[in-house]
Image (cartoon, rainbow, N blue to C red; front, side):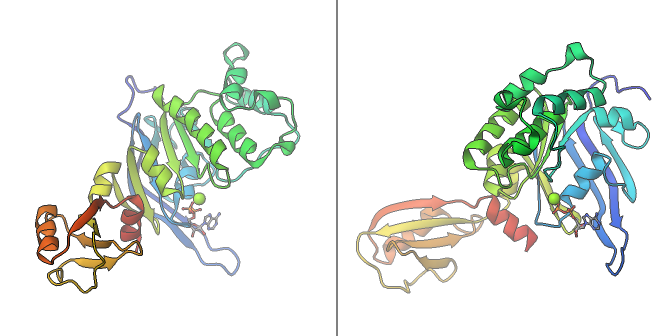
Length: 314
Ligand code: ADP
Ligand code: MG
């Protein structure tokens, strides 16, 4: 099959993708993906979020050919994974959730073998460049089994990039990686993204997803329950909190706040959580003054991805 003439709008496009793991032994069948549609825009830094068991790895492993889907279609860089598996697989690099690697090969050997597997000619290999980029050039000759968890994780990222795929997928890449190494990993991945690589990331760290991803899908019990730009997603919660520090100690309940959520903070401040569609800051501040409170300081807290996530997956 011919490669598409121009780059596709979507780096990954799944239509009606379905997966049931068949019952084994006494276990029951698991409907892990429920006929999902998911389109990942080319060039995006895409977050795939969901609680444990939501189906994230199943989705990614179908793309990587490790799990056989039960129904639907998937395209990677325009190549159908059934009709054109070679090109589909060549367009994607996957960093798996599990740290599985051959313990007896060094990082350098690991990358050379992987490049050979993808048919990258010797002259076009970028082993040195990639190992330097992930901070493993010093360790190029060490046995993989002597590497720390963080180093192994970075070696897997390096391994996923040997064939220079336009799409890089990272399945929970920072689980168990310390803060400093996480920062290094993200610097590298951000650099790839800046060069045009589409990044797909699953993570438990919502703060990380909020900081890195421009588009986020939330998956729960095998269903995609949201997929939109990160800012829209956060804007979905029509809710803010006005935190007021009074000059003098107050004694709740204060009158006139029955229609918003009132809460004391242990700093002596009080918090008014309100719907932005129903109340304005102006109006609330008026009411605060009318309640006889002199304002020493105030701030407004906006919901974050964590709040949206909790609300959507509750
Ligand atoms: P996530 O990556 O979001 O945590 P998974 O895709 O790993 O979720 O799992 C989705 C569901 O499928 C879970 O209920 C999980 O137990 C089940 N599952 C995953 N892999 C297998 C498998 N090989 N055999 C049977 N069930 C599986
Ligand atoms: Mg997983």
